[in-house]
Image (cartoon, rainbow, N blue to C red; front, top):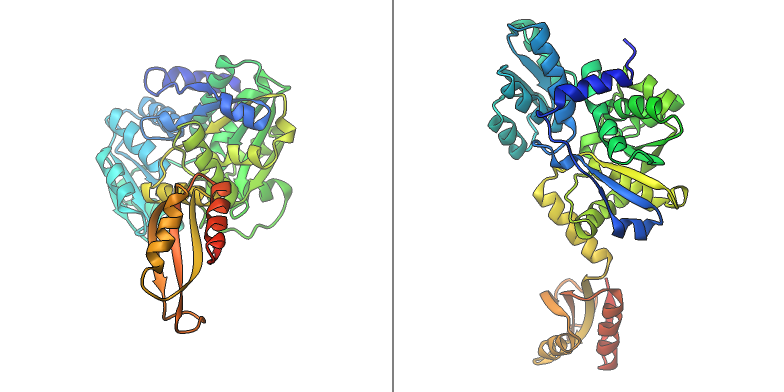
Amino acid sequence: MVLTARDIEAAAKVLANRVVRTPLVASPRLSELLGAEVFLKLENLHFTGSFKDRGSCNRIHHLRVAEPHLKGVIAASAGNHAQGVAFHAGRFGIPATIVMPQTTPFAKVERTEALGATVVLHGESLLEAGEKAQELVAERGLTFLHPYDDEHIIAGQGTCALEMLQDQPDLDVIVIPIGGGGLCAGMAIYARETRPDIRLVGVQTTLCPSMHHAVKGLTPNLRTDTIADGIAVKRPGKLTQPYIQCMVNEIVLVEERSIEKAVVTLANTCKTVSEGGGAVGLAAMMDDPKPYEGKKVGIVISGGNIDSRLLSNILIRGLRRDGKIARIRIEISDRPGVLAQVTSLVGATGADIIEIEHQRLFSALPPRRAELDVVMETRGKAHVETILAALQHAGFTASAT
């Protein structure tokens, strides 16, 4: 089967009134920052928090039509695909089983069960979970739902491009995250056929560039310990790769630090929560804005299912990079009253002290001297320099660490 724009349009009819039609919103602040007219496709607003709702709904609809007495469906997933299958199987009245690695965070297991699926925990990796799912297919007569190597899944994901081009027909560029390639392939099929001149840019991480290397004939050294875990797919799709290879103009790679900055920028500038995989499109544009200057650019924010602790850590690290949370190391004379003098000086500059560590034992300083590590909230890097200058003017040796 060769998918065309007609298949995407058919999928859109299936999804109508079943899946959220997510907004394509202009971002004036990102546009100003990047020198382009930037629009965000907010796929994080789906019921399960990611674009996976689209493909799952389309696939399960066609299964129900073809097999009205279906025994049930099964998937192997630790994330967004699991929730998409669980949600839409429940809506169609089909029993769903999701096999997850035993290392899956409990919150993800709980969310999947809350959507009505039976969760089976098996193995240490997604590969082992997949093998267990295939065993259950044979044992129980279930139908396996692949997360991306499936025509109905790909067609469902492609409706994202259909909506974007309905809302902004004159987009010059669409930037799309790539994991297994279902979203990128589906969007490329529709966009390339209806807008042959549009530029399509796929994005992967430098740690797991499976599709990037596959289309270039390279042998990747893949790691999945990335904050963009939702797109950390070691095996690119057999069905999706040819579409991407033929229709996508380029695949760019982004580093972990760039993804972090993009997550922070979306939260602070756009008030939008994105998982790491959802933010890679913005990361690519922030890394190299020149190719996009003066153009209308649509960025797909593919999901918002980020662990709250990870998000908190990323946001605080962002504050540290901006100097808004700073740590200053101060050498002091170890005598009464000096700590009060230091805190008074820091407070007088307008900084807010969060914590102080008084280091006497693990230091190379003489016994009558000590170090203070002072963590504080500031107004930014220039403010930190003001604080250092005030301390040094008072006779203290101080440096930012």
